[in-house]
Image (tube, rainbow, N blue to C red; front, side, top):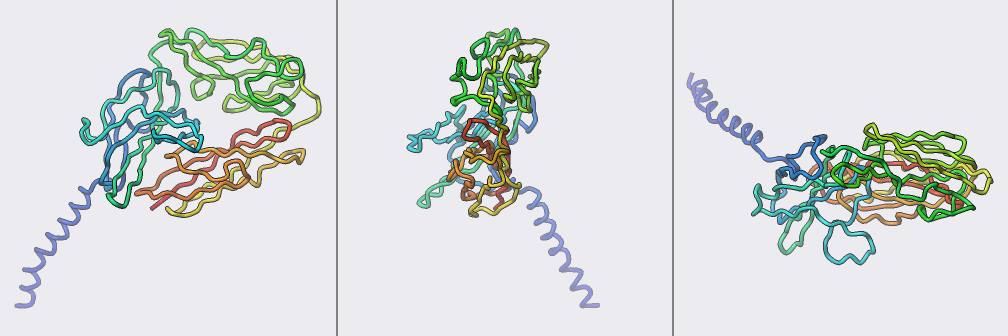
Length: 350
């Protein structure tokens, strides 16, 4: 009886301690730096200011947070605002927030006035580690930007008609036109608020139609391909408005199919791992040599080695929680025909 009574008396403190630990775990902050608002997939209005709230999680020592807007498939730019010796384009932060902001590290963020469609919001937090230097953390989500204004008309920022080939090489695309070439049109919308917005992407509600797919073929993502000589009219539709662009193609009629980009399989890696992006399975139907162009379209910018080689690489950065990095590959042949883009996701975990 004495033994049983002793056990009963000591069960209380043990149970209390267990409950304390359970509640402590429930009350713990998020594991990592995270955007709490807006939320992924939320619709926001162009030109509005929206509240930004951050949970710093266990990433203590935060000095400031910089916020950047990107189109859903735009290349991620170098974020640092200081002198950039690499020749890369440096992004300008839309807002910089500190612990003194209200709320801390957040505030009121201006939605791009010319924004439309799916748009990435990237938050970069700078952490001080004293004499050990510093590091950065990030979170990223996609919101849907909708203009309050109505679409008045659609325009093409190019010559009309657009001539591709021998009779008038267009300078819009930077290299000689040939059969198989894949390109996009600079399509903009003129809205009732006077703002000109890029509506090239189908994600912005734009659809394309070719009057002659033996001359110009329409691909996903609003990309067009030269498949033959002649004339074609491209009809662009968005929000009930329509515009036509006549295209005259007069290129060398030597057969040339566009190459195919292959960016490899998605994968998950540990922080600190050397990651290789392999495009060697890309191919050209005619067997010609390929030119490679790797770029990053999701995640905080990381140094990418050999971006113009079949294999590019980077070192997976330190993270407090799983983070997604997405890369894009396009290849071209010696005649200038480009592939459709291929994408590969790399998830980095602690």
